[in-house]
Amino acid sequence: MGFPKGVRPAALVLTGVLAALLVNTFLVDRDSHGATPFAGGRVLALPGPDLNVREYGPMSGERAVVLLHGYLSSIEWWEQVAPALAASGHRVVAIDLVGHGGSEATTEDDDYSATGQAAAVENALDVLGIRRAALVAHSMGGHIATLVAEQKPELIERVAVIDTQGGAGLKDMPAMKTLGCQPVLGALIDRFRGIDAIAKSSLQAGFAKDFPPPALAHRSLERATHRTVCRSTAATTMNDERAVAERLAALGKPVLVIWGEHDTLAPSAANIAKFTEAGLTPRVVAGSGHSPQVERPEAVVELVGPFVA
Image 1 (cartoon, rainbow, N blue to C red):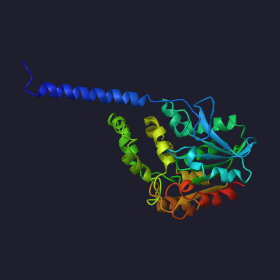
Image 2: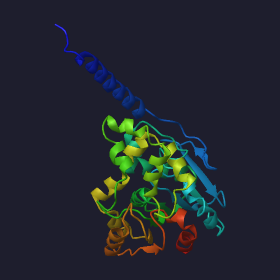
Image 3: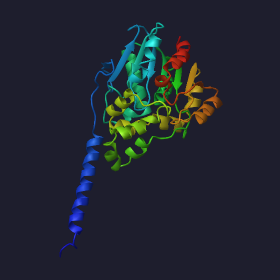
């Protein structure tokens, strides 16, 4: 008994497409790489994932200002802030989170979670001999900084967060993550992440509409694996457990909250209201979007400098 005309070829094509999708999903899901020096940094060999770090100012000393970048970012995003803080005599250390920048990208989902990222940061501080730290963190990095401060109160003196989502639902999820992390098809969509038009559209949400995404943002996006894109869940899990604005207020330590006036990724009005309600009224950076340390670095230094002194 034969197939109706055209059915057998169509079935074969469909089977081939499905097989190709499954193979692509497997390959993308297994994508990983070791740590490599990036953006002037060096690799720290650690008990868990190895991290890329860059140091400014004094290379020793038990106290340091530690900079943690946000989702799909890197230590490059601090390049206009870190030298200014170091010029005041601080030991400054910028850290690439797991799967970001030059740090190791593993195939273990737990390494990208809030607890996994916090453990990696704590390992780095230990190896660097840092016993007292002021954490300055952007966006998702602020969620990780919050957890480190909760887990290591004797280590963390104070915390400054920049455009860090203060509660559940107070962030507009980028289309790249919403679509690119769907089962099977997401792995295919992720193949198009490097196309300029798609990348620019996705990255623009991280900045004010009149601030074109800089080259460093494109580099950060290109270096991220699919697992980094989809398994970096710190913002969601931390806020689902308890609003990060409340968690920071409960630390019993000095906390500084900075917010870009025109943030649309973590909408300014709702997040400012959430932090204000928690007793942590944000300092607003005029004219900036979601990334004031890149868009208005001088304003960030003016606020952070006295805070970490």
